[in-house]
Amino acid sequence: MGWPSPSEPFLMRAARIMGRALLLRCPNCGAKDIRQSWFRLEAHCHSCRLSLERAEPGYRVGAYMFNIIAAELVFAAIFIGVVLATWPDPPWNRLMYGGAGLMVVLPILFYPLSQTLFLGFHLMFHQPERHEFE
Image (cartoon, rainbow, N blue to C red; front, side, top):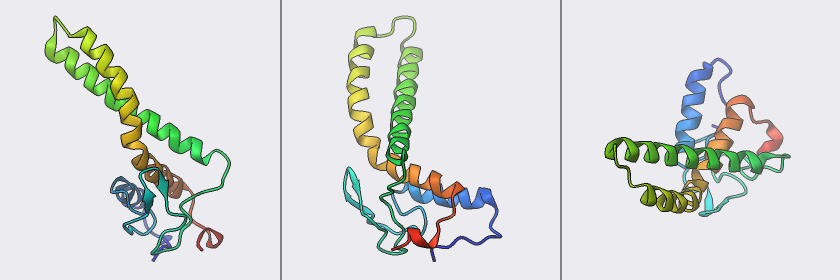
């Protein structure tokens, strides 16, 4: 169940893995309920037993970077959208204070997604080995 087919094309595999990750499911098998809480994944997937909490150096930093990038992209899209929609007189004060608030709230909202997306990104390029399953 958790082992990818060696003949599966990379783009199909990548789309399947990232689709599961976007739905906050196990990127490897698609199982639900892989979260202990908003900020923590289970140690292992309940279905395929893949290790979800990686001890590799820099792994947690990669998930944090996905989180920051997602928050910045959403902020930029909202900022540009508001400026374009209200041009020639954008509400600069509201953009400044609202932007500060968004930069606090968005990383918290995106954190679960960043964890599963980074795990999915990792699995796209690194086939899981037997020792990664409990």
